[in-house]
Length: 573
Image 1 (tube, one colour):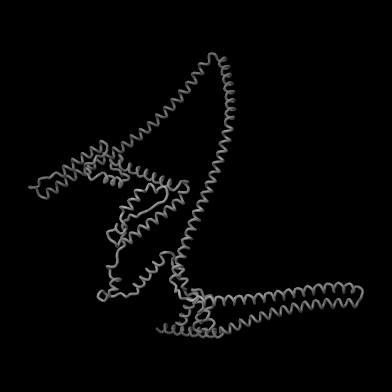
Image 2: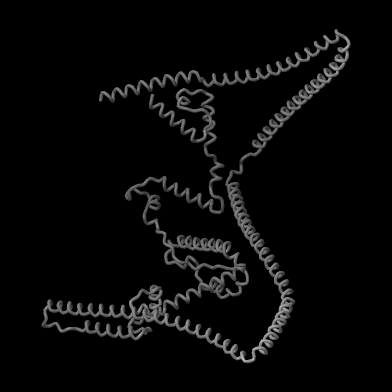
């Protein structure tokens, strides 16, 4: 029972994962009834993949036929069982032999690219070369097995380059407000300038590299050294200081002394090793001495440079102080020269000050006259420039939106064209002897049945509207009649006692009629609810809910008994 319960629950969970919305459990499979199984099977049939869904999921376009052919060939090869070499037929040898497989090895290709526009005249020589001299793609490769890989690699490179150019132009090219040709030329100029700077900085090694320091762009320098020719490194002239030439000459002498052949006819191997160790120790001592001298010289150079910088700063400060003192001395000298005739000089100074003040006022008025129109012109031009900037920004945003719309429209047009071609291909592949009259007749019958149902529904709705309208008219007429009767009887009830009783009876009758109408409406509602409940009861009876509950209780008891039996076995074991 436990095994059946687990299997039933796993099936129910799988159906719920697929998307079945009804009530389902293990009892649906163990104690099934016809309606539940029918609804479950209908749901599962609807979830099955259709041919239309398969075709819609497949990629559309020119490559559909090729992809289908490749998939069919792969399926056919996978369906063929593997056989030993001695048992293979010729078909198996063609598909399972390792000689039929080739590695993906791409080689560079030279393809023809024809451009449109003003650059067409400039590429005349290139077009002539591509037309007359350039060999075809199949002749450019030494092995035909690399043709497909090379074409795929070339196409991938061109596609990625085009995508990178589109992204760069949409992000940076539009902001530069240049044409694509101008943007490419400016980018090429900047790249060449940077390459020249890198080559220039790498070709001439810095002075720090002569003292054993690290040198930047070493890889590029080595590359340039290889480009200079195949001459040995000792024949290439390089620039350097007197210290570097002295050091090089010393190392050359030492290396020459080390590499000189030593007559070893009457010497043993141990003597040679001892002499080599002594020479190695001497060379290491010399190297350490040179390193220490280099460090000392570097420290001295840094100290001298710092001292020189300090002296230059002090000299600049002293020159500034001397110029200030000379200016003060000139002012004091002129003041002392004016002291003997102070009154006349004061009058002259006052006259000069007044004249200078008048001249300044005159100049200020003239400046204001010239300044006002220029400031107005400046403000006007500034406003025009800001308007141009706003207009250019707006146009730039519109251009971007148009680029996006063009790209989206192009993609949609391409997809629709590919879908059209695929549909045309499928239409051509369909059998042409299919009779459409049966399908047309069936469609016409369905349309006529729908039209009849629509007419019946319209008739029922019109009858319902008429009945509701008649009920509303009668209700209004009843209310108006009661209002008139109430008014007339109320007037007579003031004078006659019998009429007063009639008025009371009339009011009681009206209230009783309202209660009766309300009771009838509630009765109709209750009857509709009773019918709905009866339908639900019939549905539940059809589902056999009570019997299913009883069976579930029995299954629960059986599972408990099995669990208790298993627990007893475990305790006994």
